[in-house]
Figure 1 (cartoon, helix red, strand yellow):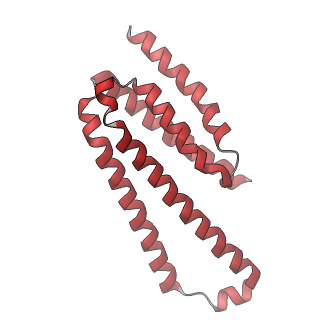
Figure 2: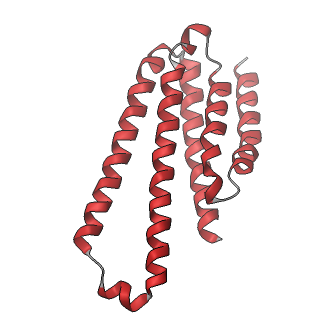
Length: 158
């Protein structure tokens, strides 16, 4: 039975890989990526009806985190565009390292808050997971981190 479950999860990971890439053709379309991840996690964990009661909080935390990330990306694109219009010399003359540090601190604080919200949302559900579901979640976490890293690297190469 364990071999069948492992084969099923492996097949899911392989098919999910193409789904994740299909959902993220470019930086402007990354808002669809969390929806794909949410569906993959739900399929992989095979939650019981009792466990599904905890799912809306997790889904909301994932969506909120994604929306905040999109807002940070949009701000960066706007800032880079304005600097590009100003020219290299003007940008170097007008740089403000203190403002940069404050902006970076604000972005990190937002990311920290989003991650804490996500961890708090997962806590109650994680306590109800079976050992098999916990193993699938661990494998899925490693898989998703690699997928996200690969997508980010491929976008940087373009």
